Amino acid sequence: MTHPSIVILTGAGISAESGLGTFRDEGGLWAQHRIEDVATPEGFARNPALVVDFYNKRRAQAHEAVPNAGHTALARLKAEHKGEVLLVTQNVDSLHEKAGSTDVVHMHGELASALCANCGHRWNAPLHMEVGEACPACAQPTARPDIVWFGEIPYHMERIEEALSRADIFAAIGTSGNVYPAAGFVQMATYVGARTVEMNLDPSETVALFEETRPGKASVTVAQWVDDILNG
Ligand code: NAD
Ligand code: ZN
Image (cartoon, rainbow, N blue to C red; front, side, top):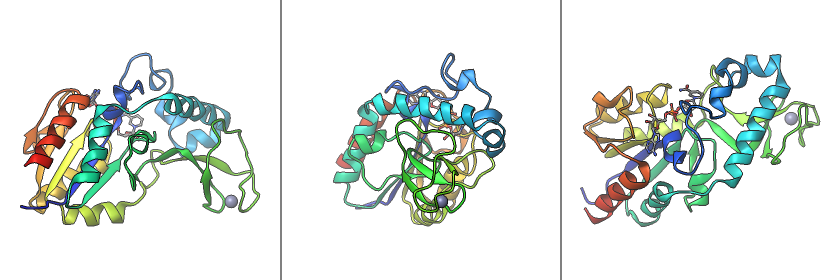
């Protein structure tokens, strides 16, 4: 295969070494809150101030964070690989972009973006969002973080599934395999005959579905994998 088409899925684990906690990290932002309160539309309807504050804190942390060798290696792969590379992330930070990757598919939204719940308009979120900020397009006080909450439909699914249907290689990095539809991408890739590889610190829920596993920290495993692809 001269120029394989590659689809990559990243999760919280790739940003862990940049200081952004994963969902299981003890003492982190997620440990202090219940998912139902801060990551569902119902939670936002009940207590918008709590939710806006939670994402303000995550946005401030993400703003300070710097990419690690895992993000940098993927940017290098995107720039140097002669075949297609689609980089899909479940992360809402901008560390792939800070490392130099362009056209990153944020299937769960982005801290850097605000969304109008009334008209669907999107704009650059301020570092500190207020509750009930006015939408620049329709002027309603219906701004919300542009985050895909539990019970909402992930973004860009058509583009992702289309790329998976043509993939020669699928790699999942730093994701626990708990949240669908992302956790099902390995099955779609396997179905079309792609080679599949998992790079994670601990085995994910779906590790048995992968052909190859490269356990360890993303800063090390991803850099090695990218070297192997580019030199292969
Ligand atoms: P996750 O926190 O569920 O899993 C992170 C994975 O990264 C773990 O399997 C861990 O072993 C691994 N990891 C940790 N450090 C690593 C490192 N240095 N290198 C490589 N791997 C490392 O995160 P996820 O899979 O991205 O979660 C998916 C989606 O779930 C998120 O985008 C979010 O929308 C949603 N979510 C999940 C939870 C939850 O409790 N699972 C809570 C809120 C939101
Ligand atoms: Zn609007």
